[in-house]
Structures are given as structure tokens and as C-alpha cells.
Length: 469
Image (tube, rainbow, N blue to C red; front, side):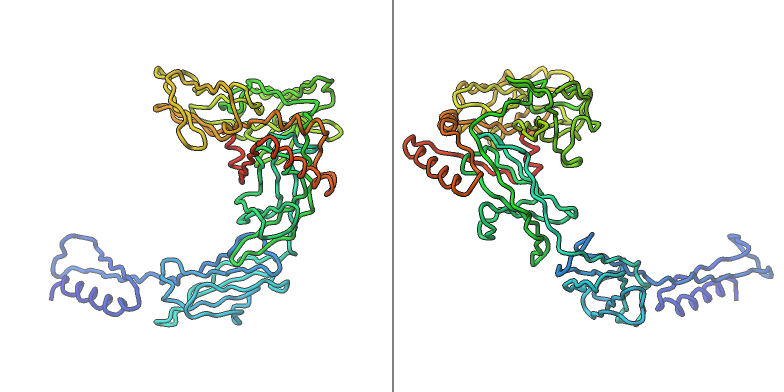
């Protein structure tokens, strides 16, 4: 018989003997000629590659640090295989002979954490069809800590001025996967407000917003809660602070690479006041910490970038603070030129759509409020000649070719209400009694004047940044 017959026969035998086991043999012929003549020598070599077992993988849900009495899931999987093929076992601290748990049908092992559960965990699978075991997974560490406690802080060190925004921050070292819960006057879950991030913004503070606040964080299903934070008092006043933060150029949105000047200015001497800011990455820091250069009470930034987006304010050595200003740095072609400070009822408002580098030949722009189209202007600007409280909201502009700007919050104060509060020297938050009296005074005033208060709650640091994005 010819060489071809024996070659095909050998291939058939190899494939028949090993196909069921999942091997793929390799056959080589020497010499490697296209044609072999009768009487010549030929060598057929069959090589069977080493068969590797699949390896298990293990992940913790949630990831990161875990806390006592929190629920945790250890999820085991076999890469490239369906879950229904395998049974799973979990091991602790390198003891692969005595599983802490085994499951025939599910890849998740869930339990409520105790102190003794700290350790390094592994897992592996066993295929039900032939009892083949996978390689054991890499170890994953489970670190158990005491139940955490949040820290509640405010963007204001002193009293907040009526009509200005106030931002509360619920700080937690391990913040991944947490939602945040806010409480006013009492720790009653029925009245809680939930946010996806660690900030809670009162966009236009009023007298009724003064008082005592708490926060806590939660994650998972069912929800695992941290301890409540310590209480924080929010004081509200109708008296303006002695110093204001002035921004040059005087707008809330800026292009990258622009220069920016921030100055603490007031009717009295501003010596001893410094510019501070809050950003998501750096938290609270001073201009002198490296992001700007200081000259007296002025902070200068020669070339800004998106990391400079944040909340800025002036603060004295005694802890007194100005009203905060939102600054957004945009890496795009269009920004909205909007006022830095709150307007007063009756003021005019002009908004411009500004463009990076060069203006388009067609200046027609659309202006939006709270996501709805407000005006379309061929000049690229819109004007409200006399603003009212109803004009308060989130504004942005859009150009058909260059794109759209981020959103900026425009706040409108009710000057009459502020005057009434100023006359009685009202400061909320000093005591429960004052809070109660203030609420009565405000109610009486509203009843007589027929005024309607409007407090919008914007509930994420990203949304807060969007006021000036």
C-alpha cells in the first residue's frame, strides 16, 4: 500500500482515540515534500499538545473594603464555559481540601460578614459531566472593618445668604458603590432625600432651609447603612458678607487654556482673606496649594483646564466666608456667558453664546432653560429685560455647527423678602426656638404679601458642576 494510505490511517487512529477527550493532535511528515517516491524513507510524527485545565476566577461583590454585618457575594466563574456545566466550591486561607462552601447549581456564595470572615478566598469548579476539576482561582482578600461613619461638611463656613446656593458634602473614605441619604431636623427615614453622589445642593437657600442636617451612606440589597454623621447646623441670613469673590473674565464658564483671576473684594479691607475651592478630585484646597499664584487677596491661574472646575469662595482667617461661585472649564467649542453672582428681581439678564478661537459665520443660537427651548436668536445673544423668580433655572445655548455649551444655574433673589429679613436681623440655626419663630414670621410675611417661595434641590456634585458647565 502507498504512503498516503498509511498517513490517512494514522490520522484516523489518532483522531478516533483522542477526539472524545478534547485533544487536537498535530501530524508532521519528513521529508516535507509534496511527492514521495516508492522505496524512499519517510517519517511520520504525531504530537499531542498538553491539555490545560480551565482556570476559575473569583470576584467580590461589592468590591473594596467590607464592613461588619454587610452582605457580600463571592462569585466564581470558569472562563469560556457556561455556568450550568459546573459545580463550585470556595476555600479560605489556602486550604483547598476543606471547602467553606459548595454549590451544585449556582456560582454565587453570599453571606453576612462577621469579624472572623477576614481572610483570602479562592474557588474552583468541577464539571458535572466528567468530574474534571478546574484550576483553583487566584486568591481574593476579604478585609472586614467596623461599621463606618460619614462626615458632613458645608460649602459655607459662616451664615448663608438668602438666595445663594449651599452645598452639603457627605464624606466617606470608601465611597465606591454608595448612595447618600440626607436628613433635616430629624433622623426620620420617611423624610430622607437620596442622591447618587456625596453632595446635596440647595440651589437658592431660604429662611426655611436653616436648621440641623445629618447624612449617611448605604449600598447593596438589602441596603447596608453607615452610621449617621454628626449634626451640622445651616445658618441663613439676609445680611451680605463683607467680601465677595470677583471673577475675571466675569462669567461662570471658561474655555481650556484661558487665564483666570479670582479676587476677594469688599467695602472694607480684604486683607487676610484667601481664595479657596472645592473640586471632586482635590476636595477643599487653597490657591497657595499649587493650582494658582497668590498676590494679596487675588488668585491668578495662567492656563486653566477641566480639573479647575469647582466651587470657589473667599475665606477670612476667622473662618468667615463669601458666597460661593461656580466655575466650569469646558473642553469644547461653545460656552454660555452667564452672570457669576445671583440676580435680584427686576434686574436685566443678557446671555451670550461664546465660541472658542473663531466665531462662526452664522451666529444663530438656540437658548434653553431646564432643557426646553426658550429662544432662537440670530445675534447669538438673548435678553430678559426684567427678571423674576420664575426665570431662575439651568440655562445653556446651542449652535447648529459648533455644538452646545454646558449648563449654568442662574439664581434670582427676591429683594423684598431679603429686606424684610434684614430688618428683623434674622439668623436661623442658632436654636430651635429661633427656627420656630422664623418659620412663623416667614409664614405671616408670605400670607400678607402673597409671595411664593421657590427652592430647587439639585442632588449631585455633577449637577452642581453643571450649573456652570
